[in-house]
Image (tube, rainbow, N blue to C red; front, side, top):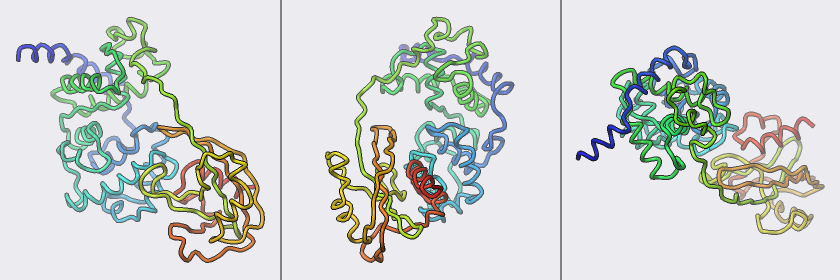
Length: 366
């Protein structure tokens, strides 16, 4: 017991919390669209969108969602296709699927009211430990600790925490520090202060140390190790994959395929693909292969390779060879479940992956 108390004392630094609260109240962000509210729906929506995404990218999506779905009930009642269309371009699409599912569960389990207990929030789809704490703190004033990527960086630099934060042992130590340093009051300013400090001053590259309230005591700054802390993730070779996407056109419409709900671009519409077998592009893009792939959809009149492009995902890099295929005539979609023809003019509002939408918009503008 004595050793545990000594360990807790070693990581508890309430002066850090007090200084951070004072800094946030004077220098932090106070005018973001989801601030100055206790509405758990708006706070939850912003927290989900802000996962692995910059504030500047989130704001227009956040405002568009609220314009279409002003309440958790409206979001729960929306179709999955509409929700994905609103999310299209923001990336990490599992967040959108979880967002929709979470709204439905909040309606079914809690009559449309988000619970104030972080442990109950944690049981909802798409809400992790840090997100649950942020929602509870901002909406209900709950004394709960957050630990997102920005907070990990702040703790690692200020307190000189060694090791890669994604490693379980290091992450556990950071959680202990996050819990130990919670202030007795002003939890909202403290939580927002951690976010603000990591987003505006203690950035990954070129941190503004001179303006940081902890510059005089920050281990990384004092030892000139801001570029080394936190330790970077050990590098691994990034797998590469390739595919051929077919841009099948007929009378101003493009053929789209619904992707399965799981996996990359899950739940979105995308372009049909030729087999991802390890063959060269020239072997896959032949008249026979294209006509065979599209035999049920129409009669091919011409095809042409478009400029190839690459797209990076979290776990691999995808190389795409798009091929424009014009049909002389198209057949009715009778037994081709999951396929649909969409007007090129409607691409901008469709639920498509960002690189696919960009490609089709360029074709429509040509």
